[in-house]
Length: 285
Length: 219
Image 1 (tube, rainbow over the protein chains, first blue to last red):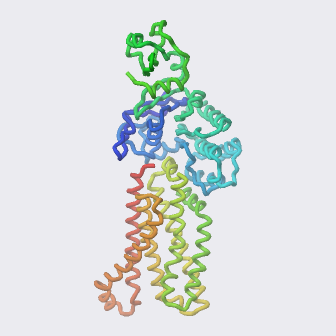
Image 2: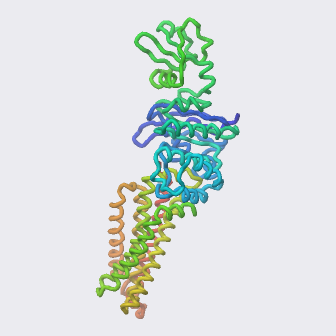
Image 3: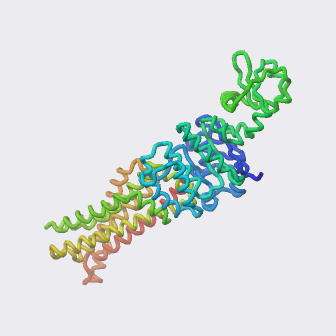
């Protein structure tokens, strides 16, 4: 599977001197949904901003379809759809007017698909966009992102603050988007159940550094969260330890190959939430 | 470019229509008043009123986040700036049409409105509005729309200041020499054309500066 998005050694420092990204590297193969997981301020939005060009990078490389991303390469932007945590569309317009505008801005704009999603999401065509609820706004943002034949979707907290049924609708649409194996999605969300439901790849980021990129299948089938004593922890080969968190009477350890750890060490059933907590609050080898 | 202009039209449709009516009515009334001083104001107001939706549009775009979304569109950043300056120029042309209509109408009811002096005032009005635009755009991109009111005030004073300063400089330097060479020309015509030229240069320079600022801007 060739990568649709390759980020290598991406770095970003804000003017206040705060280092936002430190050598961030990851890649997203075609036909996959990548869940981007991290606490507030971990660097998810900064990474996405650098990919989309709303922020300038200080170093590193961002390749889309194998080509270095540049704000002047408009043909690359044609293939990238973006949905932010809030709707960023002109609020004075209604959906009909918005369609007229975007038809002139995207070469590959497909009004038929746009109308399809507007109907699918039951959005009113003549109401001013500024009067939409959050759910309607995010549905509209997604409809726009899906209507210009984008090959890569960047979704920054697009499901935050939405009720369950709206989130369900959006997630179903996203699953369908990558079905042909040629398109990919980078999705950040605080709601790990959303990521758990649709992501094929998980990318964990903390303090501007990537801690782990792993397929969901590998994580759930090969990794393990151990609950061990200090003595047991010392006996685990360090190359297996992805992260650990010391608690009062035990150490929780995420290992990358459960088969290589002696079966006498206690293991617990884990979810992506558990792994996230361990990685975000724990230490790393 | 067409999409950006259409968006600006849709976003400002009501205020453009309102500005058209308002500037036409106010200008015509000012021209019909029996005071000479109101002529200068009448020659400036239709332009200032007509371009005012541009600043309002900049505010709306920043508030809605559309300016951030624009960066993700398949457009070069310079295109975005071009669209603003073009939209401003279109509105300025509309202001010119309103001014002409008002002057013709006023001249129909009260004679001696459509005079050479009126034409000179209109040229200065266009020049002042161009300077206002030339100040508003780069400053708004640099300091943000939050200070739009201050920027608007500053641009008005800047245009007035440049008009007065260039008028003084003209009189002190080449004014009398030009009048000696061209005694039959209306005394205010050379300066009005010169001022319009200066305004155009400022407007074009402002466009280049705005692109420079916008290229570096992060959202």
